[in-house]
Each structure stands twice: as structure tokens, then as C-alpha cells.
Image 1 (cartoon, rainbow, N blue to C red):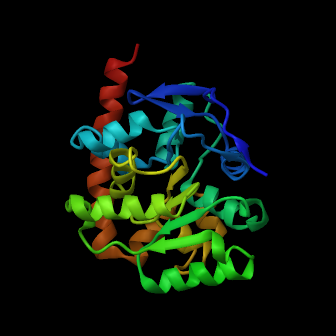
Image 2: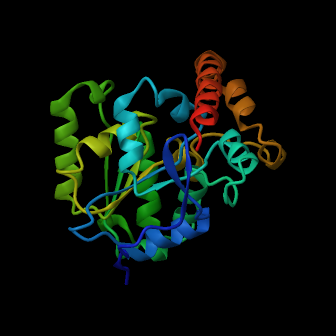
Length: 260
């Protein structure tokens, strides 16, 4: 049975004014699966930043606050990881939301003592999630929600979602509605949310449930997932990556200038 989460913080290193964890995907998945947050600890927000997150920090104070309040930050995007290594930081490798989720979903028996809640993109994904839970004896442990488009602009909708998550007695929350909405929602409504691990994992669940195509292993080996996503969604992703890349480069320059 999961034990209460330890009060001490894992080792971290500073970058972009934030503290990044040195834990691996397996370390985090094991910690989440086998420990419970206590009422005193509250929400344990886990954010896996990529260049989009870093590029938005300067212009999005709410996202910056969420990152500062997070229990764990990891280097998801390969530019973050390589920058950390270039700086001589003890990053152990890329630690992606997709990887953490895949390890959790692959070991459903470890989740039997959790109360799971998944915030998803569509009713179809909810059906897939419920089928997965039923196959592994977790049907009574899972609840789901599909927020309406633009819910993050309506405080009443966000509060209603937070209360639904709390009523379920959630101990493990998967936020799959994309950045920075997921991160900001969890941070701003942590007073309503129950003590739980909160994973902001974007398309991580969609990939784990085989709802979207996965890149060839060579694409992952050469860190070309960004190109893979542009090929799949050129209109949406090209502009996003261009803007994120520009913002990330500016953030690196500021980080170097202000580094102690």
C-alpha cells in the first residue's frame, strides 16, 4: 500500500531561476505510484517543462508561479537537457511527461490504492481511459472530466472542475489539456484540490492509450519529435515551435547573463 510522501525534497539544480529535479522518469513514476500526499503537504504538482514553458515564463506570471510552487520540475525538452549538461548541471537525461505516464500506465497494479482522476480532451478519450481502467480492475478508482473549450478563462468552470476532483477523493491527478492551462489550473486551485500528485502531461495519456501516432524510435533517438509533430499538425505546430524557440533562446541569454 502507498506510504505517505516524505517531507524532504529531492536533489535539484538551478536553471532559469527555477529548481530542476535530478530524478529519472522511473524514479518519479515509482514515487508517485507508491506514496500518497498528506493533507499537510497538499498538492504535489509535477511539471515537465519544454521550450514552450521556458519561452512563456517571462510573459506569463501565472505559469512562473506554478513552476516556482511545483514539487518537481524536470527537463522534458531536449534543448533544456542539453543546456543543463552544457552548464555542468547534474541532469541525468530527458525526463518527459510522456515517459512518466507510460511507466505508470504500464504498471496498473501499483495504482490500485490510488484514486485516479483524468482531465482529458474528448469523450472518446474518456471511453478509452475507462476501458483501460476496467481491464485492470480500476474502474471504481477512476473518474474523468472533459472541460469545455476555454474553461481556463472562466473561474466558475475551473472551480467546478476542482471541486469535482476533490469530491472523488483524488490522490493521483492527470492533467491532459495542455500547457500552460494544466499547470496554472492546478496551482491556482490547490486550496480546493485534495492532497494528490498532479501530473501535467499534455498528450502523454493520448500516447499511452495509443490515441495518437507515436514516432519511430529513430525519431526519438535523434530528438526529432518536434519535427514529427510539425509533420502531423503543420498549421498548429509550426508557429508554436517558432515562437517557443525564439522565447527559449531569449531565456537562455538572460539565464547566462544573470547566472551567479
